[in-house]
Length: 394
Image (cartoon, rainbow, N blue to C red; front, side, top):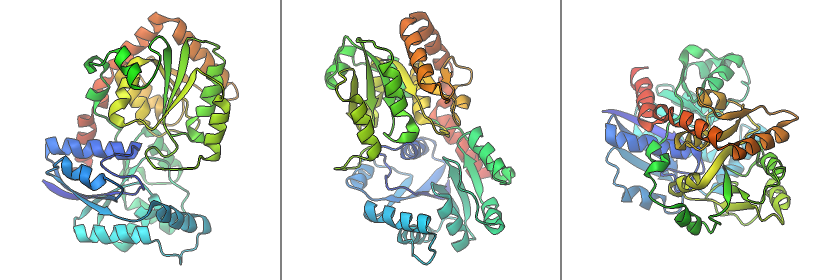
């Protein structure tokens, strides 16, 4: 059993009690490790309300949690000061706390989830550590050749071929870059395993069981394309269909004020009885919404690296309408998922795709079957085994 340290560079945490794609992915990894017993993990993460108690209640045998208690607002303010002002004399207290815990853990192999800036700092401070940077997004441009050289000395694990290609364009030596597509606990999203009836699910979420539902899941931020989806949905002019928006800006975080973008969203849906927002929904309840959905839509207008919401839709077999951005095309390969180019006709194309699927039961069934056929590929065990092979053998 190999001793490793995993660092979650996030103001969310693990177990993923407040959501988050990276956090959920990491939780799946440590859960699978409990079964596979390949690693003894020291996991360093942000301490938030109830997380320590949650971790202890699950009785993990092969993961030790080390939580750093530091106010979220201070972490973010400190990060903004450093990233925007480029004032290197400002001490990054959060980075220093993480590095201190990495030293205390004492493990040679360290996996970093998030922040290329932190990865470079860590390599400078602890050059003896064997660092694996788990790439969930594209990197920022390098400031100089020395920074690129340092980055090339770090092993990278990319979540999609798209992200690996981005490394090539940035001049990175890709001989040190590996690709492991994300995986999930597919059992959760196999709808045939869910015992709740449609009526029970609709009652739980206070929904009309006689309506048809189009499901969107994700953070309510501009890059997720939610405003474009709302405007496309309005073009359906279908009183029997409801757009169900499941998400919040930062999921489980307690906030009193809406962002400007959220205000735009709520202004857009004001007065519409057929557009419903659920706010944050617990991850274990998400599959219930899949079961009552006719269609899932992932309308990202940014280069989505490897969206878990895409994988969840494919595994569930709910017909998917998805943007051809980032790694989504790779994920949807060999399925009948409807892929839409993001261009000046994007909203109209989204509307047409949803209308066609709603009107064609046979097409929805065909897409569903093609998606389910790819289910095994997205299992968390495949993901864990691929990750483990790189960490152990490279």
